[in-house]
Amino acid sequence: MNVPSTTDKVMVVAVDGPAASGKSTVSRSAAKMLGFNYVDTGAMYRSITWKALEEGLDVEDTIAVVAMMHRIQISFELVEKRVRMLIDDMYPGNAMREPRVTEKVSAIAAIPEVRQVLVQHQRSLTRFGNLVMEGRDIGTVVFPDTPYKFYLEAKPEIRALRRKRDLEAMKIPATQEGVAESIQRRDRKDSGRSVSPLQIALGATVVENSKLTVDETAQIIVDHIRQQDQRRGSFSAGGA
Ligand code: CDP
Ligand code: CDP
Image 1 (cartoon, helix red, strand yellow):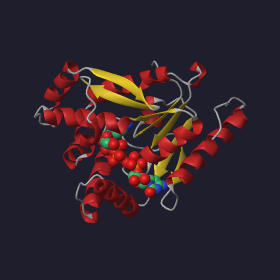
Image 2: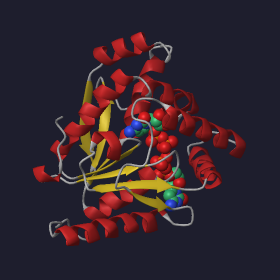
Image 3: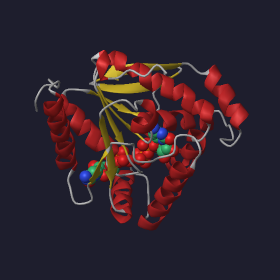
Image 4: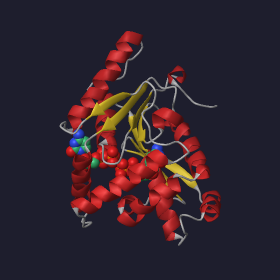
């Protein structure tokens, strides 16, 4: 298995957790504190889903989706220390956050061939340098050898409230009940699938952040990494 680890002198911080647990915002903040690049792997599954819907595919039609995976061209660019995936040179932007994409993404993410392609790309992103990468299987599958693994958690009602506010900020109407139900359905699918289910990676530090701000949560991660590395006597990433 070609899995880069810290022995390649590239550090990978893996952040996993359920929907709206704070992965994206906390990882962005932690990456900034550490001076690392940030990778949102959920955005990759969302972009593939967006593309399949644009092409009018039935996301349950595995053969059609896999054929599309072979047809499209995937590339990456680094914009302000964030890695973005492009499909046929196009970045879908906020369109990937629309409910029609959110409702279908877990079906696309359960297709093994889709995961194989994306995981291979995700591992290759160490070419950009040190990374904070967030998703569902980063500590378990994508970079199982990294010593820096975190799992974010927050109460379901807090997560629903957070996501409702996000949607409203994007002018997408949402109710608390509707969002809670959608999150619950997706969590169930993501945790219950046979390939790379969402689970706490062995050795991961669980950070319950229902009562913490984004920056407080990120600081816990950064402090933990620094402590780990003091013990290992190896870490030299730039300070905040
Ligand atoms: O932001 P939110 O937590 O709502 O979702 P996301 O991180 O954008 O991920 C969208 C979906 O992609 C998840 O519900 C999973 O089905 C899938 N995903 C995955 O299977 N593996 C990952 N590493 C990241 C996301
Ligand atoms: O990526 P994921 O779906 O896990 O969550 P997110 O998009 O990072 O966070 C969802 C929302 O919760 C964002 O608007 C964050 O600003 C907010 N949040 C918060 O208020 N407090 C935290 N400790 C973590 C996230």
